Image (cartoon, chains in turn purple, blue):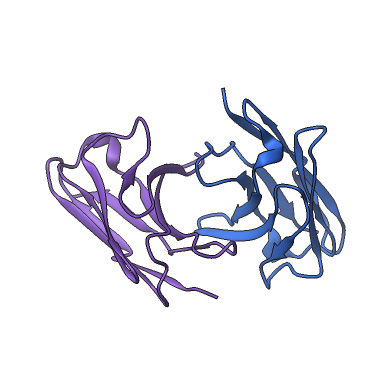
Amino acid sequence: DIQMTQSPSTLSASVGDRVTITCRASQSISSWLAWYQQKPGKAPKLLIYKASSLESGVPSRFSGSGSGTEFTLTISSLQPDDFATYYCQQYNSYLWTFGQGTKVEIK
Amino acid sequence: QVQLVESGGGVVQPGRSLRLSCAASGFTFSSYGMHWVRQAPGKGLEWVAVIWYDGSNKYYADSVKGRFTISRDNSKNTLYLQMNSLRAEDTAVYYCAELQLPWGQGTLVTVSS
């Protein structure tokens, strides 16, 4: 099975900060990577698919990059609505796997 | 609009069974492979199972293999998860999902005596 490792687990940041979250796959997944945002009590929301494609309706301050085994999610200027938990997910295999999550907290 | 609505969750004793349903609308359900994903309280997301668009292939996480069965009825636009021999560690919110479809609200399964 493909393992996904996210870092950091928790991130403290202020409104306006540039934030970067990293996800590493245990083997190459080409660009078959998605990023989700989840708020407490809510379902995950797709932000990025195919490593760098922005889902419709998602603000342009979110961007994704990477291929193979190393990926990043960047929020260019953190907004109050962005404090949440973020997950990466590989879908190179039909047996999906998720990173353990990164909680973005208010500094 | 595209919608996935999970149901069937509840409180069940260890060792018992439960069947979850996911009603799909607003898209051609029979064209999509579908997944179940779960989230234990306060924990991350865990993939559970996948079924091909036509039901021809099914795959499971090791943690549920032999106990859970995924199925679908394309005539009813509905996905199912039959859960047998439930354990306390199966307690979670269960979501049906496909990559570029908005996730439903999930259904909570609590396994407790």
